[in-house]
Image (cartoon, rainbow, N blue to C red; front, side, top):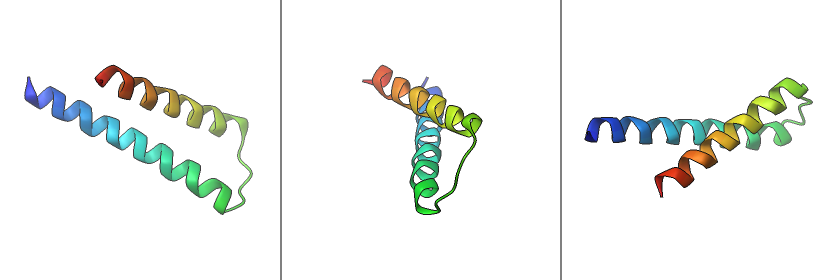
Length: 56
């Protein structure tokens, strides 16, 4: 049971880390991104936020 919780926590932190890095880098690099990439970032944000709220 603990192994599953640990793996879930690692995945959540990984997902949140990817989202934070990408959303932080894109404005700094003045990159124009396609609507598809914007949608993927939005989905990552919703997934990470939902997982964080469900863990509380």
